[in-house]
Length: 217
Ligand code: AMP
View 1 (tube, rainbow, N blue to C red):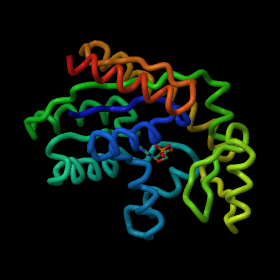
View 2 (view 1 turned 180 degrees about the vertical axis):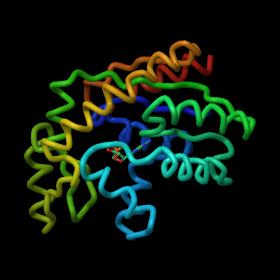
View 3 (view 1 turned 30 degrees about the horizontal axis):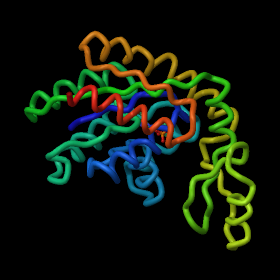
View 4 (view 1 turned 135 degrees about the horizontal axis):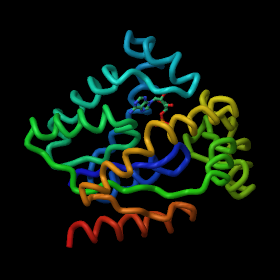
């Protein structure tokens, strides 16, 4: 099964893609994660991407399309995958359509993770990762015991470099301007499912699974 997870930054695409990977064995393909890896390695590609990522704008389509083509052509994705954070604009969506046609693959579903703006801001500004355990936490929503447990274990609550207020504002503007038009693109093709993504991750996951069962049935 080939799935696109569509939604604003902070809508929970990464969390849900990870769960689908764990339960359904569908590799999660996150362009954000792949770009962050390239930045951490200091590769050429990472150097090209870093400035745009730090400011919350989109990395060039050529770079991202190259990454996706490589990843989608790998053997572990032959049975399907979950695209998380790609496509992000119409050029990418049309290139994905062409690439899939070339590979004789088709998208089964696009899931729009629907969350209101206020909640997105809190999710993004509050998002932290425990440096010791890698656990994803939020200073507004995680139980105090979980936040304290990280500190007690000798970890720090780290914020992603692009989760500061200026960059977040930019990322949300870019989403509105560039990515939202994709909702119509996929709705016109009859493969868009909208999932209410404002609840906790277990509740949202029930919605995601429900949407996929609809596609399968
Ligand atoms: P994410 O982790 O999906 O929020 O992505 C973090 C950053 O990586 C974005 O703000 C962009 O700068 C860049 N990025 C991720 N995916 C894409 C994409 N499909 N196209 C262009 N830039 C991307």
